Image (tube, rainbow, N blue to C red):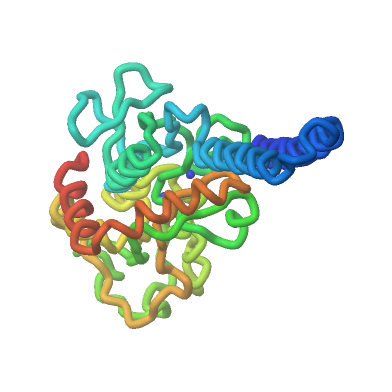
Length: 308
């Protein structure tokens, strides 16, 4: 459907290490006449001090943002990954930049687990999907949990966690569509096909020859509405979300395709600014501790709660 400060911090950490070494050397030279019989003890104390400083630096490094509030970037309009509601519940977190609004969804549940492990309180920051990585790197948010999949371009700008659920891309049309029986890409010749902007749901459409690749919709509801209104003939959609979609729109059908999109499997990865390896390790520990059956149950629950 979401470094520079860290690099500065790492540089400061190296400077502190050098300072400790220099201080030890100066202290040793200044005290050699007085403490000539206590050299080993002085060396051990300095080593302990240096180790303590390194431990403190490691602890500081294993935080995001201010270490208190975890600002989670998402569009809050990409159910069941994330969406906006007006009432607080056990499943929600506040949306920091929308007064009186809360975020729910699968990404939100995982973000809450990550925040708990980091000892932080999560809040959502509602942004356009296409701007999430920039917001991450300019410090507006601390982490992206937004139904975002790692790809080579994004990996150049942010560090991504392990996947916390995997989805795929399918195609949806209406029961009375001339394309309802399509099983190959060739069967879709002439169709107007729409996906969501700035996502793989749009880019994979280029794999289908001889179709009208429509201007993508900014949000999933816009894409769905294009099919419901007849503006588009076919839309690309989340495989995991199809059951709820067909329940909401009984006249929609999933195309049973023999041809498959290449590279369409979409992991859902969290993203943080580059250079925060310790934090990334902690995030991956949280993610990898979620059993597969719990992931599926969380997804099913989100599909039940998501807005129509």
